[in-house]
Amino acid sequence: MRRQKRVAAIHDISCLGRCSLTVALPILSAAGIETAVIPTAVLSTHTGGFSGYTYRDLTQDILPIVDHWQGLSLEFDGIYTGFLGSVEQVDIVMTAFDRLKGQDTLIAVDPVMADFGKLYPLFPPHFPAEMRRLCAKADLIAPNLTETALLLDEPYREGPNTWEDIHRMLRGLRGLGPKRVVITGVSFDGERLGAVSLDGQTGQTDYAAAKRIDPMYHGTGDIFASALTAALLHGRTLAQASEAAVRFTVDSIARTKAAGTDSRFGVNFEAGLTGLRALIENA
Ligand code: PXL
Image 1 (tube, rainbow, N blue to C red):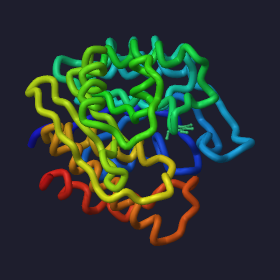
Image 2 (cartoon, rainbow, N blue to C red):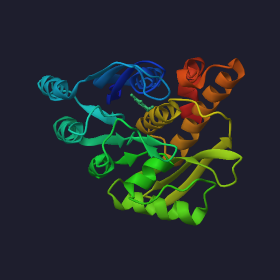
Image 3 (spheres, rainbow, N blue to C red):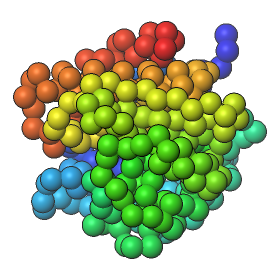
């Protein structure tokens, strides 16, 4: 039997609110991938819409975890990073890449730092420049439109988007170093919303989208990026992986909308987990 795929997921634990590790771990596991985790910080909730949350920075714990793993002769098929707990973690995570990656390890960086035109208040103004350095080390990046603007050091513009602009952004992000680029939250008509992708190896551009559902629910970027990473580790093309990840995310949003849940508590992706493997294989 072929060895089970293994990924290291490096994100915070927001104890409540369904984002970062509390979605990455179940999604990757349901996709059949062994998932080791490195928590970057522990918060009582995520920072999107809650006040008074606790915050424990785990910057000092990351490399000791990596060092311990290094002694265990493990192979990682993927390293997948998201929300980092401090600016210093950028260099630390780059060191983790160097220590843990093998020849064929997929390095997936979701440059979680901003939304709705604004950098998260937790991060200093030079954080995007640091995140740009991390993206340069990645095989795949999956920013939203706000993160794209920050990475390209240009002003954020409200959608709908034009293909001309999106092509320019995809090329700009590719120019930072990653072979594959996905931009989320893209709409060309205001009615459909989805992800554009550029596979630098084949030159193929794709748009995976579905009917837009409001309001914007928390954690959907993390759900998308986790499903995308899982599908790529299963050998799907970037276009197929984006299709599967959009479907999985949108179905989760639709269930949550029907239930009338407060958007801060994230979306019901749990009900889709049993079908995730088939969704990935048939995309
Ligand atoms: O979903 C992205 C995310 C992850 N982790 C924390 C966050 C956010 C977005 O606000 O606050 C702690």
